[in-house]
Image (cartoon, rainbow, N blue to C red; front, side, top):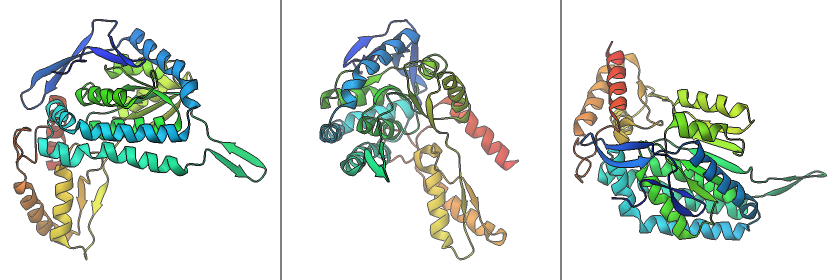
Length: 340
């Protein structure tokens, strides 16, 4: 089991939690705890934010070349730890082990590579007429991520923050913290300077709230539910933080009469089954011409019957469990509403 479950990564080293609060990580395939993590209290958050604040000036002054080289080392570290990351995701959120490699893992190195590519040519200074516009790092960023795509969601926040010269405190979802602990190890081994990246585990109500209200946090980047996004925006308002939110949502998949129905309906249905349906980009409402409805339903049913439901550890499984009991109950309720 992971060595740092009860620790936080603060100021370049692993430190014990200050309080005694813990959270069980549930393996959705067994519905039993597979790990127990420490939950950060406001004092732990203070320590992490202070480390990020202390490191900010130095990191903001670092060269673009140094940042690009660091992103490259982190990318190499991801490839070295691929098996560990896939195993962690499979255990914490129930993603089939094959899908962990094919759907989840690649987004980490891809974000790092793309961020480095953009940074190569990024214009921090831009002359507009007689005015020089300079883009500066905003400061200490609180990065709050969801459980459904743990590698993607963490790296698509951490990589641009590093590239911009910001320092950060990451709070991964308490549902999927194991992969984030491995990412912290990768960042440490790649030589991220102490305090530039910090990680605290915990829930939204205590740990997330402490980050959102903290006077030394300059920006909050949040991906998750609309309910939590509203709470974060309100919590951040008193200290006039920048708040960036991605609150998911489902878009309609509209098929016009001249579409290739066998292909389009199959693709659309399979994209909904991807990640056991736990994707904010799933085109979950398929709208078809009324007279093509029976045909579309038949093709969608064929796609559904082709899915292999099984244990996450089985390489043949394409569908594992959903991540939590609450998620399962929500899905059942939505299915009943749809049928009604």
